[in-house]
Image (cartoon, rainbow, N blue to C red; front, top):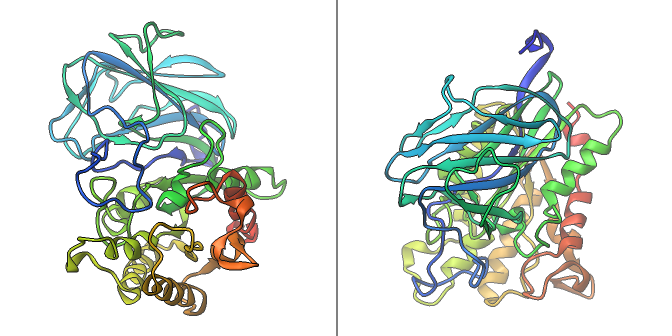
Length: 395
């Protein structure tokens, strides 16, 4: 791109993890405390419609490309037109020189690069036109940014007509930028405490976003992107009722495939413990502390094989959870002791200590937790972001 290749590299500036299905059907099985019950769900299918979504960059660059994926759709998906809009105006996206593209089953494709100057913390708008009827969606359900669905091909229009609001990302899985060659990416991998469930929609409040703002404000640190690969309900070892493939299953797609990744921050495991204690859960779905630790070790091995540093986060306080038995408390203690004391992670961020109430250590502080007693508030997410030593990301 204009002779910039010598001192620039492609890095993931934004991303989201795709799920096994766009919606959890209420009553389809036991719900984990981490799973949304009454949240608006992504549409199961679209037909002859335009979808418009917003992605906020966490680093800047001189060119942009967009990643689309059909990770869990069964039939191929035809994209009739795609556009990018932002401070630099509205530009069409092409795929191999063509304005339309077919997303094969399970595939991820990047658009052709477009020269487009963009800064960190900039909202980019991606519009896709789906010309076919009854197109099954691949989604990230908890989008926390308003998306829009409109009839017909309005992808190039500055304002949509007859649009309805949504809150999910459909097929859009990444935005990459051509950044300085010193830039690198941190991938946050985990469950709803990464995804940002129960944070204020539109506030960009999840701790990966707050961490990205801290990094961008450091005057001497090289550009560091933070990509949020959280999925509400996610587990380390197994899929979760259609909400998302396990961390083990999605590590290659959601971590290794992100251009420029150098660090992984792992905050997951509490749902593995919760799920096994739900009434009616089969024995083979149960997970003890040793099982979760074994999963961590497999993720550590995968990361280190690719020369990535992996930061482990302790599990949050759990006394406010709907299910909090003595067995769960003990399993939680064992897992956190291993995270802190094993020395196997390259670094540890003690989320439990950051969030706990000193007067009642098993619970989160009242000013850091939402009304459900499980998920951190905006202030709780800010506290997690502030707990990171930025020196971890200097090398």
